[in-house]
Image 1 (cartoon, rainbow, N blue to C red):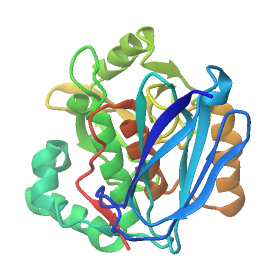
Image 2 (cartoon, rainbow, N blue to C red):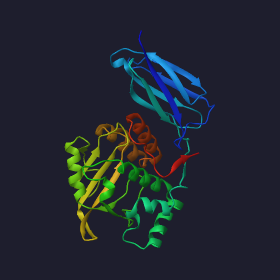
Image 3 (cartoon, helix red, strand yellow):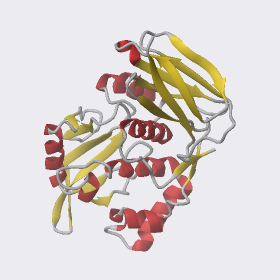
Image 4 (cartoon, helix red, strand yellow):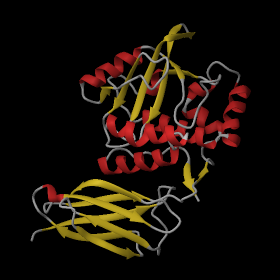
Amino acid sequence: MAVSKLELRIFDGSRQLFSAPANFLVTIIDGNQTERVAKFFENNQLPFDLPFFDNFGDNYRVVVSTDGHKQAGFQPVVLSEKFSRTLDIMLIPDDPGFSFVNARWEAASAKYTFLANGVENAIGKARYEMLLDEREQSLACFLNLVEAMGHINLSQGTPLNYIKQLRWDAPFAPAQDRFFAWCDPKLIDQVKIATLAKQFAAAPSGLHPGATSSWKQLQFGEANVQLTFHENDHLTIDGVDCIMVEPDMDYFQDPAAHIFFEVLPNELTHSLTNPTEVYVLRWMAGRHAGVPEFAPIYTITS
């Protein structure tokens, strides 16, 4: 039987190769649902020779785990006899923490200037540091979203170019699963253009109270940005009649999977989308797609 080659690389939440030696359980299952590998390894970079079928059997599933860390995996990993594929997997601790050493006010406000728009610098800094001190999950969510939005190339700029001011007033303050901001309404036209180019697709807005329209990015299998607009909410900023935008990032691209495996479980457990899970999914999806690395100005630690 012909052989396809896979190189598996295992990273930690700092986006660096996982410290080795470790005790990684690697499971690899082919598209025929036959288990090809189920073995412990010590190294963080592992080569595999796997059967090549020249059909759906080449759609592999790879899962990695180690003690004290969340299991992670990716599918489908499409292999071929004609080239070697590299797959990067990230493992984060079961009880993850955050390192915001590179995400202090000075760095964040310089990178995302709308953070300080509309308020005195001291007020903006105080609000931001409140997230640092008391609401780390909300800050991680915000940094995930703005990093991902900065990689969305519209016909003119990125979504960040249209954000004018972050909302801090209840109930619109940054949350664990989304934030609200005032934006130039031209962003809607840009998203509609991107929809014609198959970068976005119209999404249901019913799960977002007060929303008038919503679109979801289509680039990845998981952790795509969704931009939801509240066109009946207005505020004039720098002479622009702004509307409210609500960015969030779901685990799944497929709407049915989003409802059944994210929305409904969150409702039952009274939980919100976890920014650490989004971080892992979006990083791995980006590495698999070969796009610029998803690198928020924070990292996940033990």
